[in-house]
Length: 299
Image 1: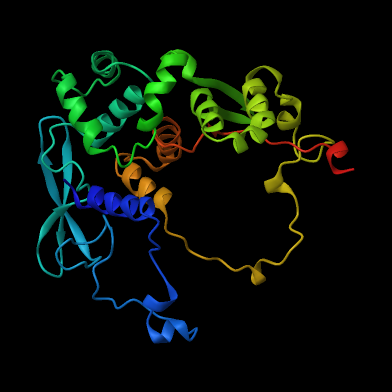
Image 2: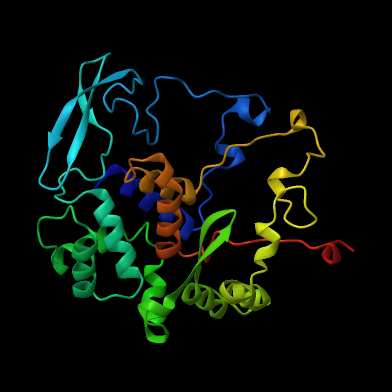
């Protein structure tokens, strides 16, 4: 099992046991006094795919490729210690690329059976030259269960929705193309899980109606017109020099680190991350949601 999966298992266990990861009494005296503490440079980072795994130096050069059965992996050589390493440590010992593994997990969590998932993956992935077996898929599902938390909903979602009904999709032509997706099954199950979540039913209804009743004219008009002014085009009313930016590490950060290793092209990373989180985590219910505010809403 990879170190990344072990790290996630430890964090989930800590959350389940309601054990705080940081407490005032466990911090150094300097931190309790409010002083700034910097991490020593020699300490091993939690996860860094762009550094030497041996000495953690960020200085390296490319050193050819390693040809596997299904992919060709870029090799790097550390200029500090001379060790050769690869960027993707999660597929070590696996015959399939990480991209194929993530697609298989997403299809499985959409409600397809293991045999259906293997057949669909064979049709979609042209690079696969061997037949994926359901037993292999079952191993992946068990190994990556700490990441794919939708597994606790999957059985119940499959009873009410078919794979084609589970996610609502629509392409919105708002100056550019946006792929709207709404996980209908996950939203319903989250609401059924706790009666307090029923206050979000108007939001669920709004997301259901986006493909058919979205006011596209608000998003298609050009800037400067009465309608269609985007939030990113509005003038700033506050000073960015007074902004306070705080870093945060949570489960979403770990999930992003995991998924982004499977995407080689930067322009495809956003789409890949959206799809994986929507299909596999337990909280994301929609992506690329059109949000608009009319004058009447402000009055």
